[in-house]
Image (cartoon, rainbow, N blue to C red; front, side):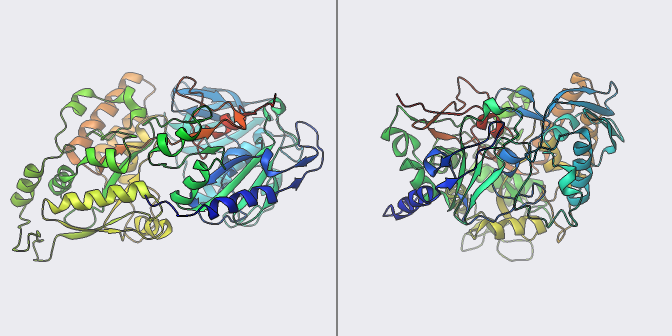
Length: 555
């Protein structure tokens, strides 16, 4: 990774923070009062956003950071680090015995940031709006606000994963959103939410700040004054600001973090990178030959040196994936018999060459294999240019493929262009994240279900490789329709066997949950010894961290 030769970007960041001398009026219920400047705010970088747009619409894919973490809140929070579930806007829930519904009891005394009461009608309204704007929740039949504190969801069929899918949806106020003509296009510049930090007190393209919700239902947990988000066009400038001590909490990839970050101040600088995030896959577009051939997919996988990828590209922060495709976050579900019998996720150049030879992809005089029509076996590997770790992984794959006579080219424009190719199915291959939820159901659905396959040219939000088989559908249906743990485990075991057999994607490594922090100004971050949340600044557990952190008290 190339480090900038000067710290001008870092100095500019400090100027932004100090220029944000934000005057906030006094307010009740844990609100901010008096003068507030950037030195009192929790500084968080975003390495994937060159400029911010003032869009706090939680239904928009272009929502500003912290929209779904600090402004709007869900019914519950699932923590993948320890498997715990924390009631949030809902205080409790009761699933129907046959799995065809859930009733949530809402927490008493919650208000919106404008002082209006939060009720079950807001929950029912939000889910209908979500379905209207973006679809999803196809299994929902009815959503009924029984009274102000009780909302019941009924399903068209038993659906075990519903608790966490419903529970993670952030809720919006009906009294604000019912008058919005087109919720998909709304920018919601002055949001009203139930979260701890809802007030937009400053907004510029390079930085914006959120202050305390004056009506928050947990005022004793608003210990920090506010949040300042900082925009960066890539890992390198974001890392420079972080290593210069100009941020408090970061979740981007930092090479050689012990030397680059921790060593400068080991008493205050720490990190925690558990390999429990989504598995990072090399996805091969199965609508294009030869990727529609499982033997070719396995041969290409066997050509890859995952040890080099994890040690070099990923700096040793993770380890190679196995042929179950499962992240470390699903260790409790992993079938060790399948994982222990992997062959196509281990490097075997001779084996890969033999498979390609047998499949008829012969090597020419130039050493490059050809397709049946005589054209070179050549394709692109797409990855965003700003992701230095994934870009390095793509380059290693490119080099590995030379050993089996495959001509790959790393294609690294900006992420928006890469994702557009994934979504419309025009890409060849690419490095892609996978679904990561409370159970492996969503992971396997996202890589093998026919229900997630979109025709080329139609936008896909998952299963970019466009692969699905009826056998996976049946097993996913078995899992979703069962309230019996043994039946659910049997379905997941058989999905692992099917994944191993069909290689729908090429798993590379379980993604680390990045998290680095500096306790010079704030304390209370989650750690390996106290894993009450992940260290992600953009995940479901972020709100747990925001309501735990406290400023350091000067002696």
